[in-house]
Image (cartoon, rainbow, N blue to C red):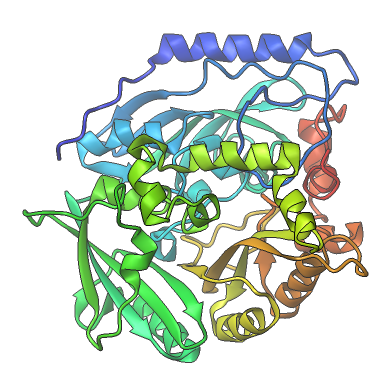
Length: 465
């Protein structure tokens, strides 16, 4: 596998980074908000501005060590998956779940939630964590694992979004991969048939007699949807490149009855969605053939699009353009929701009828084990489909803010699903805690953040604290 290995940080450098982090915590005045000093984020919700310096995580951005024999890696909390993959892929290994965007950090995917096309067999990123060190809200660095050392923190950390503490080091499992990923794009004309095929793959690990290692899909309309079935391979020969004129999600579409086939290097497969931020790069003109010829390859990545989004937020560019056309501002609808498999077709029909957004992403998942996770109560043994949709809709000036998002929240709850909290949420407090472990959260907060130096989960996820 011709991938250059990224250097590891080493234990001494890691310990120095933790010391700086702890010192920065104690330098924050009592009563002032404690936050990370980050310039970038993969969250789509705002937060209240503050002049107080944040936590210094500058020494916690790398991979401490990779053990290819044990298939584990010790990784700092602010290490991006891009850097993590660069360190593990030369060993023929990757994390069990690699979220779609290069700049998502390992600590962020564990304290929040991450998902990808291995989640149907490997669950969510926190399920491959063996142990982790956490700077708690009390300013202490504690080691936690599933059984012996603070297991209540280990079980409550996923979906806590930094309200109990921040991971400084995580030991994670790795899995072997091939040189390439061989893909089949299977078209469906009926949503029920699509969902039935998802269930069959999750049951058998194959489709039409071929093994499936990676599974996700795209819905363009009620009568045009696709499953993208990936298989680890060592096949020689050419591979496709979607950092040039071609756009990955458009390559999925076809009219032929047989599946379309494609091959990507494993590296390019892992970042196939990052190149065009799924399909959201079209909002910046990056998919226009003329613009794309002039767009540098190094700028075809989500981190660049994030900067463009930040400029739009700062100067209200999109709303100003809508106003010039005599139209109201648009409501941002950027969400990922988990729907039980047997209700997924119902949700998709409702969504396609009620919300003018297309395409949408599908990513099947099920928990890897019987372990319960306190603040995001997916049911062990239950099969789900993550439905992702990221765009805007015309705002209704007569409705309360977030009207479309509120309707989606209600429908997801009605169908027994859950919603990720990386974007805006509009729940009232009673409903929120019913969905997100409110019966257990106060005890966790009292144990690991007794002075409430960190905001609570409702304040952070809904109120923007």
